[in-house]
Length: 180
Image (spheres, one colour):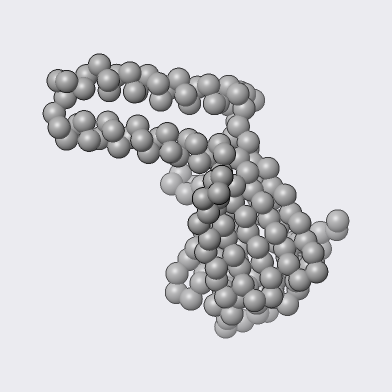
């Protein structure tokens, strides 16, 4: 079922003192068609049963349809950018001029790692910022996660030493030894 696979394009750009990772979703035409067909069938059923539906069910129909369309558009046209330098980690999620940007100080970050996907979690990169865990680069493969961490280690070794280890002990920091 090659036509139904969802993938991501991960581009890593490293300059002196900064790493920039851009992640874009890449869908196949088959998956786009199936998604639009399912959404269309749901919209059609909601339209034809609108008059006899109770008010609370109308609200649910409208909410599901609107959130599905917004999510679909964002997932197909949106982009996530991660910038890491010696002072901060900046995570931006953008869609044609609309951007949501979060920034975290490097001194507050620790335990950066790739997390494996599970039934309720798409996986990706996770990092502890103070007392909470943030997740970004959702859905990337393990190879892409290792490539990002290896590039971080090669370009910014001091930053990698800080954020890829726990505050109590930095002894477990392991060099990935991946060549370019």
